[in-house]
Image 1 (cartoon, rainbow, N blue to C red):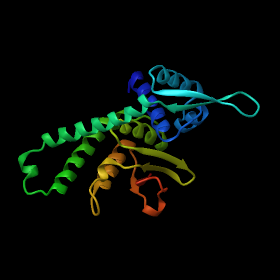
Image 2: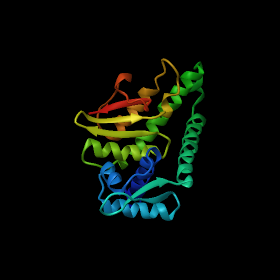
Image 3: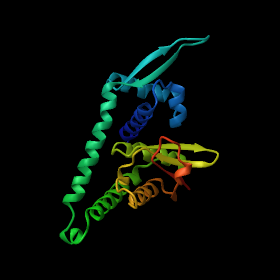
Image 4: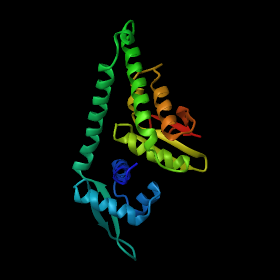
Length: 215
């Protein structure tokens, strides 16, 4: 990945964190992203300059004041643009279907085929650009890229290992018995470069729709 690509990926990851949490400090962002505080500050300076992030000072207690960062309205609107990008990708896959691929298929079967092709396309596009020596690093890098296409995943790494937790993943729009998770799983395995297994519903925190264990 080029230097410009790495910078863009880090800023997208910061925006993704701020999308779910208000008032995040530099130290919290640095810990979540595995970056130095000074690096995070430089990214925040750019995002504030562009009007996507705002900062407020939180007073209280002794010591240096604490600064908290939040998405602006313009920053929030960026994520609706991600779904426009996903819609465009889906339309491209629909238009590329050959007559023999659509013949005799139900609407749900066609939707499954389109998402299968999309997952394959995204895997081929993103896998070579994923960075990191560890599974966690690769997972964070891959999730940041997928966020640009409307895939809302969060990486959770603790003593039990690395998990990918999703909120409303696009490929799961098939209803009961659908196989959207299979497409997500194949895509994530290709991007992270490690086995990915689905979590049971009982293992998911309340605000997540799906989840996977990596490795």
